[in-house]
Length: 341
Image (tube, rainbow, N blue to C red; front, side):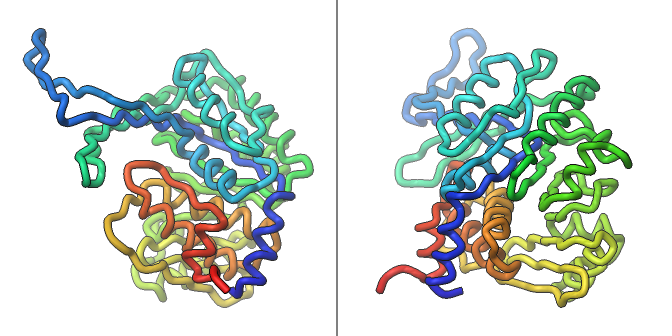
């Protein structure tokens, strides 16, 4: 990709209307001062003194962060938060992002806000040391009315949208924002998704999902297809098998080996990852890849061009330590060597 083509694609971002749907969570970072360690008089246990708390939108919110960093004109968020303090913080984090529309983002008092609380010990001159995380999740099934409300909001959000992505971040099906009832034949949600450019990504796996644009890693690909997906050649063959079966393009992330894509009737594409330089933090890299694939394809990029941009974004993000990072257009240009005269 040359500089002219890069600017042609990224200049279109400001006119895009994209939908991010699924599991939004609150990423809450507690920065601990190791010089202020105490011992609790009551329990005899160490006390970690927090000098700063940072709150960001995570999971589907990380995709949203990255789309906002790219300058996407309108980002419609479809999800749910609890009627609690964490929900207030999540909404505030999303509201701070340019281009975000929360007209389709619901509050439900029956659910607690999905929250990752991350204690970080801030050692001077060193990368942050992350301690055991504290998670708040919903382990019971979402009420049918909640699933219906989110489904209706998703259908409405897709009207005149250029593209969308669904992210399932929960550990058990139907405990988050995405409902398997949406996938039933004849479902208006399924019909709305299948008629548009929609990405799908689930940490549980995409078995049983309608044929959208699947994005997954190699291990998930192997489990879904039942085919070996270890070597690059095996990944390409399995990706081609899945793309042919679904009739849709698929994207397979390979960590330090890059990314593979396959589409029906086409030879698989492979774009390598960019070199690692120094310490890394991989949190959020996959969501940065999703955001950049989504924006680039919606802006008219080829699959290969979108994959190049996604790998540049992943490289930017993994080198941002102690946070769930994002990549701007300028940062992508630097990674791709497209700056200067």
